[in-house]
Length: 142
Image 1 (cartoon, rainbow, N blue to C red):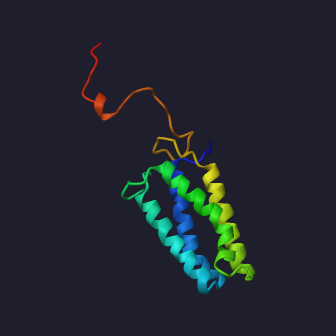
Image 2: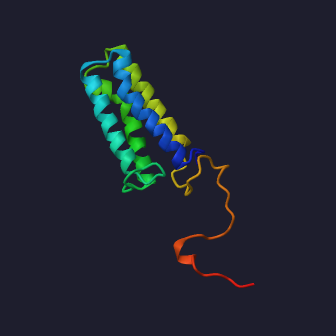
């Protein structure tokens, strides 16, 4: 399992969304490559906002499902230049290869089953005390 917590992963998602939006402008990417990248960027923003992570706004998508979506998108990225007819353009092709690699690395490094709001696994301390709602209000007298 990876070392990135859901909270840390969410921060990388935010960086990735910003990069996908800005990359076509910064690198002069136009045409279908720009449109496809911006469409994927919009979908990634939506998936991130709807994911059950500490930084998610509406937590409808379980984080492991978020992971499956990223795995599929990351695996698809290198094939998009060929599928949409811009594989002959090196800047566009290399950007899509790099994004695919980056997304797959993020997928590989993330622990999609980690249940904590901690930034790192080391910051999460399991005290053994159950503080869930069902146990609150039950006080033990000594």
